[in-house]
Length: 501
Image 1 (cartoon, rainbow, N blue to C red):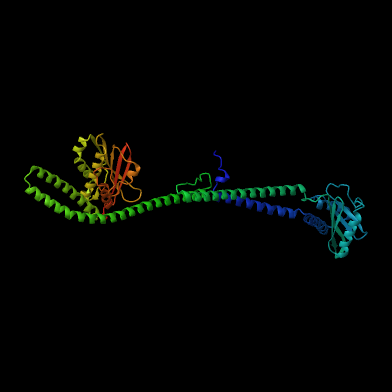
Image 2 (cartoon, helix red, strand yellow):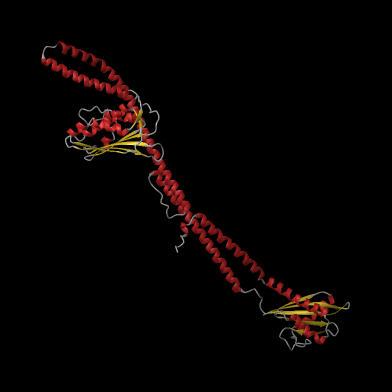
């Protein structure tokens, strides 16, 4: 049988219930003890015993009136009435001759005619009986001695219209029943123990509550400095555990909200920089395009009129560089303009496989092995195929170039992602075993014009970032030096219009 849990782990509801039960028991015990104390006082005991003696005297008088007997038979009559009493004696008093008769009590076989009454009590009995006869009503007397108390009661007896005598009863109390000090001490000790137990239980409940409150306060103070901190309340009552769980959840939600706000703020700053940069790039590109077109025309005219092979060769090199510059200008203009998407339902595995096919020869030449793993459960997505092909081409080319000279493996996975909340997504992941990047470099790969290549423009991944965002997706880059780089692209599977950025 499992041991009951300690009081400190009980819920406050059960602790309060237990305390309430103890208080009810204490109040009930106090009430019963008070009643017993009231019934055990000297006056209460005397009052109760006087009523008993008076009732015995009345019974003697009623017995004589119902069946008058001769003085010789009064002893038997007295014994019959007194046989059910405990320690009570009694008899009769006659006016004629002013004498006592029929004195008896159970077990006193020798009693008779009153001569055996103690001389110290006989005068008092005569006085009480005479008083009852003269006043024609009951009379009583309480005699208090050093060691005992004597209760005496007499009632008049009426026969044929005249008072002929009186019936009397007497009881000697050597100690007052119910006034035991030991019983009073035991009751007082019981109440004291019950009160002490209730007080102890109250202090324990208050201490547990204070400990729980202090733990919650310290936990809130820790949350002010570190939202990742947690309150451990596994050893506390159920109510404290619920509060701690709510505070822990609140801290986690706050931290998540702050992280999201930071991401949104970073995106907004990035978008603002891109917008400003886009305007600058557009202005520069327009200014460069017109002179570049004039230069191309002049070089072409020179190439047509030239007679020397060396001049033709120089013109060809110049035209090649002009085309390269013109392509760069076009990319700059494309970067500065809003992305216009024309989406169609596309099986993303097919598009990825198509783009990889265009790089098979280059990968083989560089000693790069391409490994694909496509999930059949990946849902159809709505993408602009040409724009998304541009994204995949850029990522694949960067991965192969990162493994030039040493070779390696390019792993491409396409898999569904089932989010707990929100629509499902498709994940396209590219992993290479190239030289990798530092954490600082990886954090800046989406910045415009940031590049680690000698001939790069720094616009490739930045444009990819904007294209993926235009599709409502996300692109993440993580890298470890001498291990490789991972590019993870998430695209929503839900249908709908893509946003314009």
